[in-house]
Image 1 (spheres, rainbow, N blue to C red):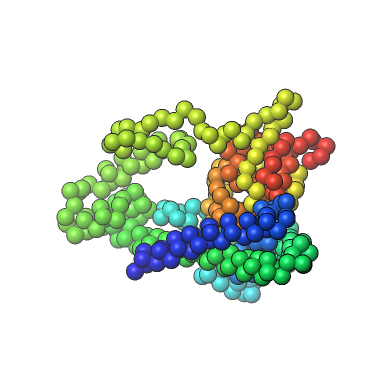
Image 2 (cartoon, rainbow, N blue to C red; image 1 turned 30 degrees about the vertical axis):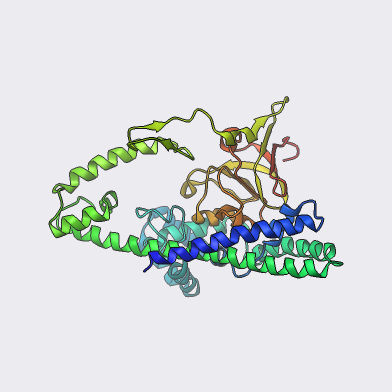
Length: 409
């Protein structure tokens, strides 16, 4: 029954695409020359956006830790030693924080980077990961009030422009209000479905961990975590005695070797093949998207992406490939090939976002708008041309990205 519910999410996405196109077309016909930028600004600051709640929750934890130096020091010591007993001791000394910490784990423990991989360890399974995330946020200056004000400021300005532009057009004003309300609802449902998807994966992750513990105790596999290298059918058949695989340890060792080889590859955004999948890949010599990335005659970087959240910012770029090992991003522009919902904790502290993949309805675009952060997605080639430490200017209203001079940065 769980998987039948996916049809609701697909229908919501279908209607959402229609609503977005209709809303932007209405704004354009109403005479707004920057209809797309205005639309993005109008989508900011939606209180019912469930995917923003984990950010506010962890920001609230970070505020508490920031205001209590003793607590923050104990959390750092626990993270440095990576001992659960040290974290338990820190929480026992600060019961109010411990209650909020546990509430975050219960509600949002499955919202983290790579949350749809069954081998990913969640905040709920390892509270030390959550403590490390709180420490990262505490080292910045993000606050719940600041997040809300940043979101609402963009939306207030956009709504004032919309009201002024449609003051003499009551019918268009009514149509715009209806379209925007429905679009915001669709976006909220889309993000809620994503969070629910992470929670469902958390259920499967817990099931896999329990099966792994059982097989490990009986000597079928070397470590409980090794179960992640088997399929559910292989596990079921082995337990029921119908499997053609009787030596699971050898199978797991082979797949670990394959995984090491795959880790060195960069997957193509699109693959074309003919016949037997693993034997007949058609190699693509070029990528049309990279036409949006180039340098001018002076050697300055010029890129064009999809404008997703308005605002102009000049700051130092920081390339992030693995969010778990990301360098400090506070006040910097994150550059990434792609993101997933678990990156939201990094995004909250950033000054801007540039992502090679994604669309106007991608999670990066939606969260960028909700957080009021200038955001550009679909900027193919950005990771090759922009390196960490490079000063960059982005315009989230037009999708323009350009290298900035050091003085401007």
